[in-house]
Image (cartoon, rainbow, N blue to C red):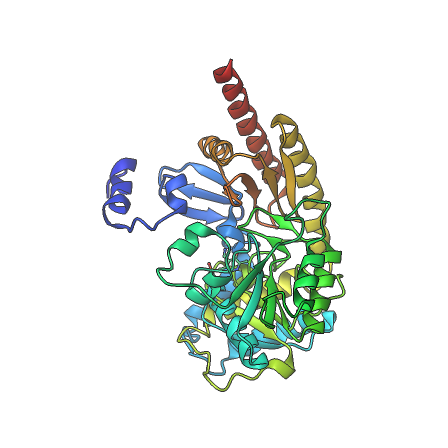
Length: 429
Ligand code: PMP
């Protein structure tokens, strides 16, 4: 096989669909990964602050998960089990119950959906409609919930919506927290609309949101707003769906992004880092009284990714059996905020967005954010943007990133920002 980079890459350009995306910004061929680093075919190593868009919260190839998976495969453990009872599914459920659900007083049932975030969201929206007999679902500006048609109807981004090719219905969009600036509580608006019999909004089956909008620009709702919206859902007979696909599994600071906010969602959707190893796996948590889908009513061949159950169990036992990992995340998030503060100083008008290990900087220009990310890549850092104009440089480092690597990655980000802003100043003079 040729080692020439352009030749290697040409097969992607020649044969891979134009729908490919992340690979356009990181134009090399990756070969190996360990912890928070990726290595390409030429042997160049990059620090990974994208982490599979939060699918690799525990880093690449965690040694304990890898060992358990290799053991499972070498002992002819089941690879595919539809939704049959398997030892690995049982062990995952036991671990999830004892380390995650019970300590948080959550009586939710676990429903395995098809293995993508979008499929968990589809299941959640369908279930809420079935439970309430209503069709309308309230979602929010800048929310991202996936690109299958049901989930896409709840997604705000017009580029993704444009790919639907059909009408996207039965969703009412409301302004997310601080959408109208700090002076306006958008929960007041939601309350007024729900209470006004002439407001024109059909009674909702569910109110669904991300507590921190991952793709929408790291908009973090305040705990007060979240609590108010949760209370409004209850008052109006709507289910509360929290989409924790991106913000969950520790990313926003705790296992669930809504902890310590005095809210109990009726449904929680999870995917991305739930398998721990980057393997496809999704689930939804449902309050028992709403667990009313009949057998296979929402089905899917890949509901039981048995390999993912193996690694997901290890992830839960290794990282969530006590509070030490959560404390580490908090320490890292504090450092992140300090460094992002330095980045903000370099860009006029910039601001820090997000919370926990899901923070970034809104540099107020998609072009500038993209320049910063490309410069960072040249310097050996993989980092992406988010937001309605792609104007937010978003740090999604693995939560397990060693301190030295984390600091190195952040200093590359600062250098890249400095160089890009200095160049732009010179060009303007
Ligand atoms: N919900 C949220 C909050 C997400 O961030 C995403 C993916 N970015 C999805 C749903 C969809 O997940 P998937 O890409 O696995 O379908």
